[in-house]
Length: 292
Image (cartoon, rainbow, N blue to C red; front, side):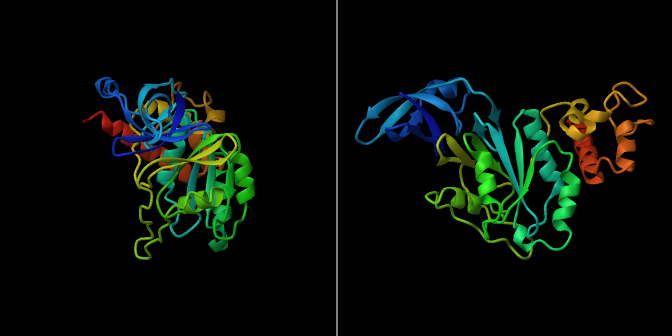
C-alpha cells in the first residue's frame, strides 16, 4: 500500500493513505543499516500490521525528487520562506542563507514578509529594494488582518510547499489560517530579545486543498552553508548572473579582484549592498571551512 509520510515523531512515522487515513508506522531495520532516514514528504510503501489499530511498517521509500537536510523534508515543489517585516526585524544573513540553500536544491521560493500591518514607514519599501532582483517572487502579508492571504493560497495551490524561517515570524499562524484544523500552537515574541519561542517540535505535512500541502518545520536561528565550494556560491545569487563573464579576470569570485563587474554593479546600485555583504560573509565562511 502506498502513502505519504505526513509526520515523524520519536521513531514513529504517520503515513497518509488516500481514502484510508493515517497509519502509525515504524521503519524497517534495513533503513538504519543503509543509513537512510525516512523524511516527512516521502512517498512510501507500507505493509499493514493491524487494520483496526491502523498500524504498519514502512517497507520501501520511493525515489525522492529532492531532499532538504534542514529543514528535513522530501519531495518539495516549492519553499515558502517567511520572515517578519518587524518584531523581529529580518535577519538578512539568515534569510539569504535560506535563498542560497533553496537555489542550490533548485527549489523555487516564494518569499513572504508577515506582520505587514505593524510595519513602520519605509520598512516594506526597504525590503522590496533589497530583494527586487533576488530571483523569486515576494509577498507582504498580515496573518492577523488576513491581508494577501488569498493571494498566497493561490500560489500554494496544487503544490507541496515547505514553510521555513526563524521562530516568532508567524509561520504557525499562517498555517492555522490556511488549514484551521491544524490547530498549531503559536508563540509570543520576547520583547527583550525579539526572538520567538519554538512552538513547532517536529516537521508535519498539512493538507490545505486538493493536492495542496504545506509542511511545517521547527523554527531555527542558524543555517550553515557548507556543502559546496566557495567558487560555486556566486551561482546561487541570481542578480549576479547578468555580470558573469564581464569581469576583467576569468573565473572572478567577485570578492577581491579588480575590474569586477559585480562590484561595479553594487557601487552603481544595481545590486543591493545587503545582498552583496551577505555573499561576502558566506564566501569567507566557505573559505574558512577548508582549515578544519
